Image (tube, rainbow, N blue to C red):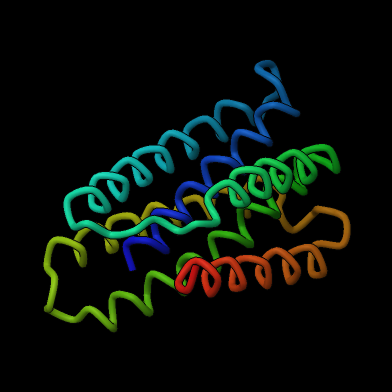
Length: 163
């Protein structure tokens, strides 16, 4: 669980880095994205710590997630600010589903990890709602874009569990 969550939070930081690189410091959505990126950086730091403390091997796909996440963020921001928000909404939809499954699987076995996941899940849902409130659904081809990004997220989760 920790390996997959660390990989996902790393990917999220890279998506936001790509969006911010394209939108730049003066874009009206920059502060909003910076806020979400800061929360994702905190999530990643927590899972980095848990990986070290618990001796969990990180995914070998980190270099790929680095580039793929940045590219996804940059491409969606190049399409439009609404597409960047659509990306966030799609990713957070899958992360919410993923964290909910983990919480069910964990039960009471690991209270520390359960608390971390519950807190981060609430923040991910906040990101999704923020993205929807800032035009995600107005992105060109939103249903198709959302479906493809969500499929990619599910694939990334599955691969990071194994590799």
